[in-house]
Image 1 (cartoon, rainbow, N blue to C red):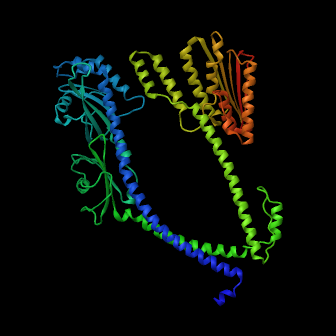
Image 2 (cartoon, rainbow, N blue to C red):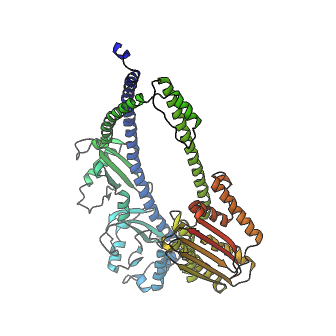
Image 3 (cartoon, rainbow, N blue to C red):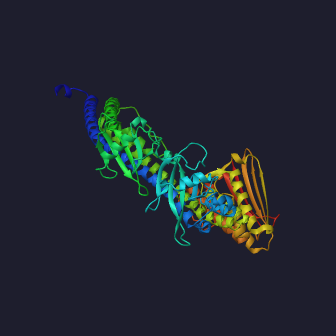
Length: 606
């Protein structure tokens, strides 16, 4: 203690702070290791359980999709009518649908409706003994139909449907040697006599199961299995009698049979010298079960690795803190004069001027505290600015959400199917065009290229041309490298839509539109002209007043809650332009002397 009293204030301060810092680091490291090990163990347990639950959920969704397709086939009255017309005693020498081409075309058309335009399943077959078969692909020979249709392999029993384990296509229709998984269910004539007259087979590629179950578990020692109630291995797939994992999965299933669903268990199996951490989860829509195992040493490896990292980090922090404390003790005091001068010139923009150090420890400590307060004030100001920026982004997202509608793709598909059945090419074409517009408007990302925007404009005008026919004419002109210009999505289309919703309401057809998109090294420009009723001086003044209000809000960084569009698509578009390009963007609203209607011009300096 006598030696300590003879040390200088700076050295004493260094020894005190260094010792205190080392003690805090040691205690914090021990406490954090205890907490982190417990938390890591809980996190590993959650991850383990979530893996089997998520795998089971995705497999359930796959099975549910196959079930939906089979239900749609049953609900189709045309398909039921075709099989009702066959009668109880079809000619067994040839496939009924090879002779009845009209019935085959009707059934195959309905089947393709449920599997297009986006392929949902691999294949759909409907067959019945002794010689009736129709599907998406080509027809198998009658001898194969007779043999397979009479097999008990296809017997569903009292169940709603039956899932067959992975197998090669028994009909020899699919090209290649890739296995499939089949969902089978009876075709019941619900529109007629409620008899089961055929069997529906919905085939799904095994690649879909592999995509769900395959992930990099090799480094962690994890192994995942999917099995059915008959102990057939669904994943990983191997031909019968060559599957080396069959005995292991049976042993794991037996060991897990007494455990709770989804809970972790420690089990022992003959193949491993150490205990295994295991969990299982049963599918809701099928009699399948997901099994996941991992050696205990691999399961705990992250905790051991964390201990090593904490020890190394603690040593490194001790050295760093010692160095920091050493320099802090040298510069911990500041003179009162410098503090006074700094206060006179302090501001959030100016840096504080520091004078030479003195030996007045208390004054320098006071000045250090003052500088810390100033830094905290600066950080608070930065946080306030970031908060305003976040508020602006949220407001922009709110405006963007008004542009991106939520469309009913299934309804479009149903309308297109109805048009196909009615042999109306116009209905199918308009459904396809409208589907393209919907996909573009709800696509990922807020930006696109000017070329893509013009392409969707062309699709939209083609759609409206189908609606108005000879009453509508339009021109689209494009020049320059528009594919290199990045713009917000749906920037031009709303202006064209305004022509139909407002401009053409007050005139007598024909309607005329002209669209221009030009890009060079300096700027990109877009113009929309129509021969509509145009804009009144009052409407132009009101729109420009709203635009000036938007400019004032964005320049002052205040009042973002006042960014209201009042359902005006032009103001919504102007806000998106200004928040994206700032002063480099212009929007002109007026009337066109050439066509006599409205003129909208967008100009962006690149």
